[in-house]
View (tube, rainbow, N blue to C red):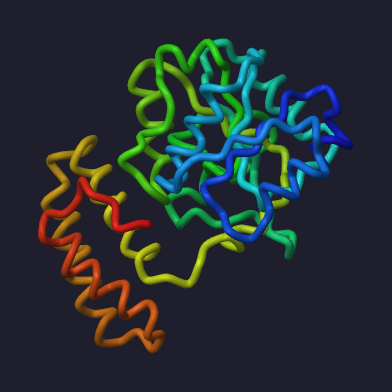
Length: 251
C-alpha cells in the first residue's frame, strides 16, 4: 500500500529478529525498501532505529497491521503544517468493524465532535507522524518501555517540552492487537510500563497506582477464567509489584 499510494516515500522496515522469513521476503520482493535488521529489544528500540535512519523532514512510524489509503498521510502532514507548535500527529484509528478504536473511557471524549485536528494528551503509537526537526528536541521513544505505554510517554514528554500533540479526524484502518502474541509477559509488561510512567511523571499518585495494580492482580487471579491472563497477573505480583519496574519482562 505504501508503494502504491506513496511511491516517492523513503520506506524503511525495521525487523526485530523475526524467524518467519518476512525480512528475506521484503528484500526479495521490495528492493526499494530499506530493511533494518535489529535485535528484539522492544517496540521503542525498533522505532528509534528507524527514526535515526530516516532522512525526510516528516517521518511516520507505523505498525505493520495499519492499512493506509491514499491521502491518509497527507492529512497528517497538513495538520502539522497548519499547527507549527505541534510535534506529533495521529489519526482516529478504526477497527475492521468500522468502529473507532478504544483507548479506554478517559480517551473517548477526544473523539466527540472531532471535525478538525484537536490537541490531546496522547495519540496511539500504531501510527504517528512527526517532524524530524522536533525530534532533535524531544528525542525518540523511551527504550525502557518494551511494549505498550511508549506512545503515552513520548507524547507526554513532547507536551512537557511545550509541543502540541494532535488527533486528526482521519479514519485509518488498524487491525489492532493482531501482532501481539498470547503470552502472559505481554500483559504484565503493559502494567510494568504503566507503573514506570506514573513513577516518572506523576510521583504523587504512583503509590496509589501501585496499590490499585496489586489489588486488581489479586482479584483477576481469583476471577479471570483465562489461564494465560491469570499467569500474567501472577507475573505482575511476582515481578512488577515488588519493585522490578526498570527491567522489561520481555523478550
